[in-house]
Structure formats: structure tokens, C-alpha cells
Image (cartoon, rainbow, N blue to C red):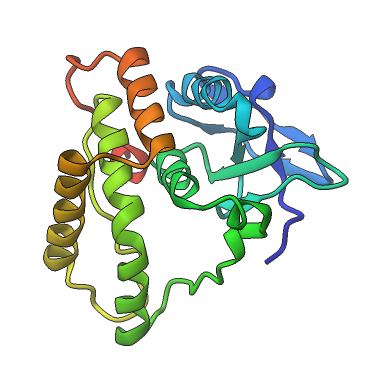
Length: 207
């Protein structure tokens, strides 16, 4: 996977929009982002400072990049300024063990959109836990959650069945406890965002 992706560091993020930036030879076109994204980035980076890991707004596909010679900290790069993308990538990070966090994209190979039925089934199996955590994150931030089957150009997913599986995993976490980093971030989100405000959509749903 290509790690030479242009990224936008938190200090360059405007509250209402992203101005054109030059970074690594790439131009990032002016585009609106969620007003809460800068707050989310700051919240993650301060909450997990002890993990030497930062949430980074990217202009391409999401990716996890471990610290290396060029960058002294691990990066969770999320896509296109979407609040929901950030929460999803954080959820994956909360599950990844210490050894996997030393590998690009945790050492997994991602099968892109266009999966056949068998590939989609495998995709959904590994997405149940992170999406259950993302669900809890989303609600802690006072927003509405929708599962993502992420296969627009492939086999038709059974969205209802997948939603039930994610909901069952969410119930399991509620009853038996979330992974430690996920629990920490749920508490941070709840303390930072107004839990009693009207739930608002995330990511592509906001369009």
C-alpha cells in the first residue's frame, strides 16, 4: 500500500473549511469538513499522548502508518474530513495489539470495493468488532450511527444481518466491557461532546 499520501496536520485545519495546502507535492482542494473534526483530532491526540499516536486528516484512503525515520509518531490517517471515518479508524486502532501497531495498516491486506460474496463475508467478519466500537463512539459524540458494508460495486451485502451482528457485539461490549483504549475514548467523547444534543449524521450521511 502506498504510504506516500498527502496529509493535513491538525494545526493546518480551519474550523469551517480546508484551504488549498501544499504538502509532499500534492494539492488539497478546498473542501468543507465537519465543524467537530478539529475538536476530535485534538481530543484523540491529547487522550492518547502516552501511545505516541496522532489522528491525522488525510485527503485519500484511510491508512495506519507506524512511526519511522521520517515521522517519530504513529499516524491514524482518516479520509476526507469525515467525522465517521475518523471514528472508524480509531476503532480499528483500539483493537490492534502492540505488535500489529508496529505494522502499516496493522499488517492486514485490505480487499477493496468490488468484493465477491465470499470476500464480502470475510470482510464483514473482521468489521463486526470495530463497527460495534464505532457505534459506541458515535453515540458518545451525540451522533447517529449506520453500519458500513462498503461494497458498492461488488456482491450485494446482507445489510440487515450485518447490522444484527454488529448490534450483538455492541451488546456484548456493553455487558462485558469494551477494550481499554475504546473505553477511555468513549469516556473522552462523552465528556467533550454534548450527549443531550440532537443526534446529527456523520460522514456521507451529512450530505
